[in-house]
Length: 360
Image 1 (cartoon, one colour):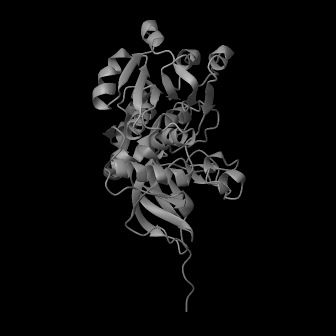
Image 2 (image 1 turned 45 degrees about the vertical axis):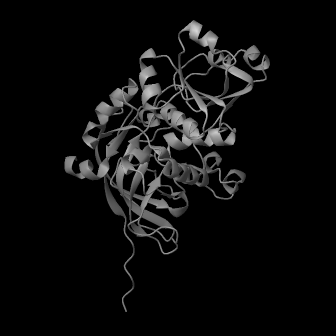
Image 3 (image 1 turned 135 degrees about the vertical axis):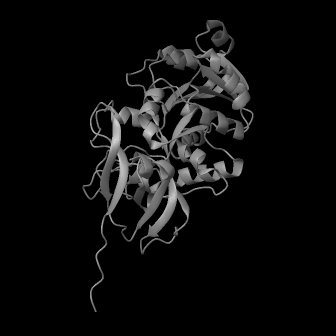
């Protein structure tokens, strides 16, 4: 009897950036064959995160080229390894920001893989086998089963894809810092991809939600489209003064330099401000902004796999999705330009299945 043929790598169509210009163009690469503990799926949709924009330009100094971005991917399972029991062919799954971790350190054993010192990002990172990870602006994904998520069956897949980063990035700190108490006053700084998800979660948790924005023109959409209870133009001194000491918690989603003291002044005694945006330059805080009312400033990064699944299930129960603009892959460079100008409401999502192969 002839020995079984060895599994072979799979060729994948994608779009990649080759250098710090950030220009994306058609690219072909190989993913590993489906191993015993792997899930392979056809990518249907992939969200475009602001971190993708940073990475293609090497703004954080850790980019590896050629780079296929994308860590908000949703697709249909086409193959599972022999050790995989939780997933089956035909099931709709997702992969977010992580594809590997050591699974043995303290954070990993607490289901906090995002804080593992040996975690592996979904793209522009080196995996344990030495290969460079490539993301979801591509047709096929192969991932360890421990990092694959079950998508809610009642949600539209395109609008659910950004939950895998934008959703969990705000959900995780809201849960960890007990910023989910019905009746409390919850503030959201910035009304973009992360901010609008924070508003949706705040309302789902039963809180009174205030949006802070430097753009007064966003008031109508904050109130009418997202259901915010209050809108404050943060550049208006009178509005900010009137809000002093009125907020219990704040999620700060802004990735540009901005004055934290301004927002800290709106917190009540023991109020909490948690950073999820990542400005390129350091931010400053006057100590009195903290000591005058025993206020707290913290930070949070995405979420672990268990918590991400919890978030997805919560979104399924409460019919929470991201507001998106769906695009073909050929539009991605224009989308990146617009993203840099904050010209999107509120997340671009690439229709991979219907545009990648036909337009590359």
